[in-house]
Length: 197
Image (cartoon, rainbow, N blue to C red; front, side, top):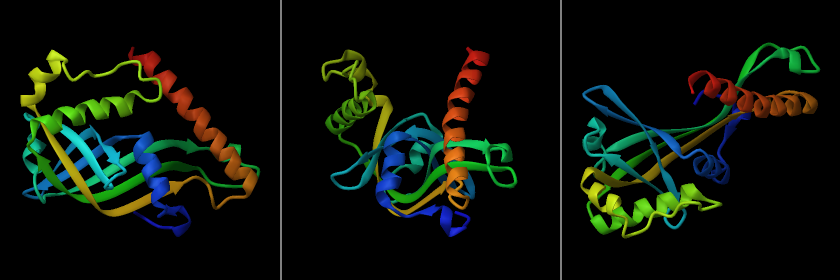
């Protein structure tokens, strides 16, 4: 990602936290110089540091998510426009955001029992902390759909984080930018949902 260094974050704990909090990844593969892009939730497995995901067999990218193929992944945290009006010092407009870029290699897992357990585990992770829904092993819809889903794991090769959060400003301005990021994200989601639903 583009420097400056003050916005780069190489602390894996921070990057893993972004992945866990915002697991919907942009998955990018390339075939014949053409990118194929899919948005999929990927779960970080702490036991071996791999990402686990599932893809529909009819997705054109499915064939590229197989053994040793390379992928690029983008995880996106909160983001927003920052107006100079929030600062206590003279500044120019900017955009604050959190992004994690990864590259890795894919391994396809063809075991149906592992696929089923992986779907159950992913549901449990995404239902946390309340676990209002439990995907049971004897769910008939789950069994019917196993033939239409592929399980894959990604071994991460490179990690890169960019946390552009006005760290180069005075402490009060950095705090104002943090407040704006929180406020704007809540307001944008509500406004957007009110317009489309």
